[in-house]
Image (cartoon, rainbow, N blue to C red; front, side):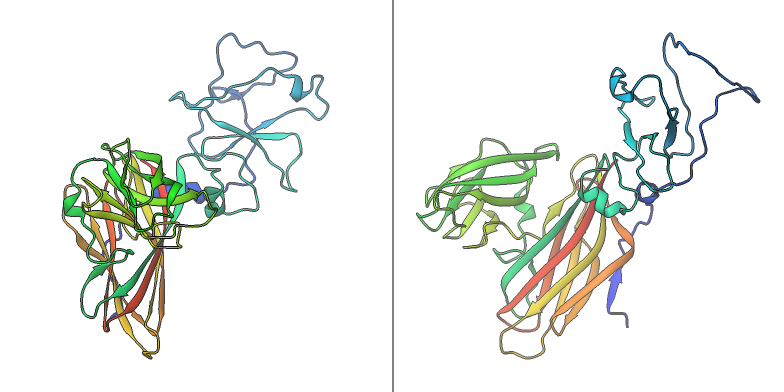
Length: 353
């Protein structure tokens, strides 16, 4: 019997694979008329525009003479766009095998280093339309044989109570948590990314000014005493006593939610999943991790399941798991003993549709 199932995989990853290819040794650009080459000497005056068709989806090398009569720095600003009117990037190839006067016009990259890999450049923000993030979640008290979502609050995450965008109410169990700035990152009513910073007022609830349909992360970015939150900070719907949708544990300074919703206009590719299960002084323990996915307008299905034995587990997906826009992800666990501590981590690359 296999230790896990991976049934939600949709390996249609043309965008991801294309972005990961780094093309070398590209031939010189030629100007032709039909099948004949054209040799141009002297100045060339262009009345409107020059269009270059590059069906290979790769960089186009642009050369300058070894001793140009005018320096590149003194040239007027040049804006390069594709057929859709979107700006293209111009970067210098600094690899040892390339001449120093070679520039590249590229639609896929922006100053990507020749010796770096795709994921590193995504993390650096150097590939337009591609972003990466890591979801790390924690449940401090899992009960025996009771399925629960991986988040600090415990229990199954209340997706069913959050069907419309609405204000969030932020409150702490400690009066010491007054004057703290908390950055909320989530989605608006159209499932587009949205942020807001609220200032806490201790045990009195503070409402956001914006309406959220989902919350991804909330972080204490500053406080009057320079410390993380002293009490339990919770985020509610309707009022300060309404349904809890996020929880910052005392001293953590950040939510630890396994739940994530893919923003509108983007596709998520999950690269790996990992989990840990621990119970102090109890010897070997076994737990089960379940990744539930709900496509927009659909129902939650079991996308992935694995057994966490003797403490930790990790699975790197040879082909990333594809999750479509507006889909909800909820990682859950099932433990074989009370008072089990459980954590879950997974990595995502988001690509614009």
